[in-house]
Image (cartoon, rainbow, N blue to C red):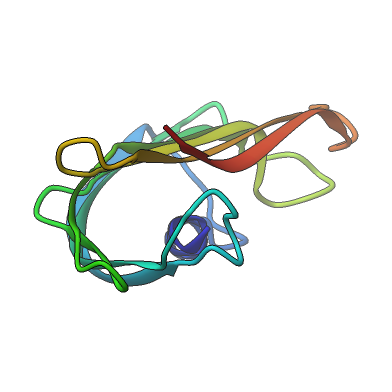
Length: 165
């Protein structure tokens, strides 16, 4: 969920109210963010110990505005170079996983200056332990679509879980 906050905060920078788009425009960025996360058995009962994740993840952002009043906003994050360690056992886990966020929307509706018509947030992090140590998958999926006229939510799917195998 920490990644959701960073992604949504980045979205606010690009979607300031009142901006007018006269022609198709694109924005591309690449940024690294530090990570210092704890996954605990209290939050995720299948864990046998707290796992500490450190390092930095890379985020690539691609935004396209079109003259018809629409936009596409895409974020892709990679966890290359991040480390995970069991705080009780000292076990080092390989940590990897992609994150993607895509939003399509309108910039010219009368009831709101900017709003998404559809967005999908999908994140799968894999903690891979050595030998017979359990593998852990931290999974998040959020997908929503909205009515173009009223802005009312039409579809809402939200899953957040940890799977220990």
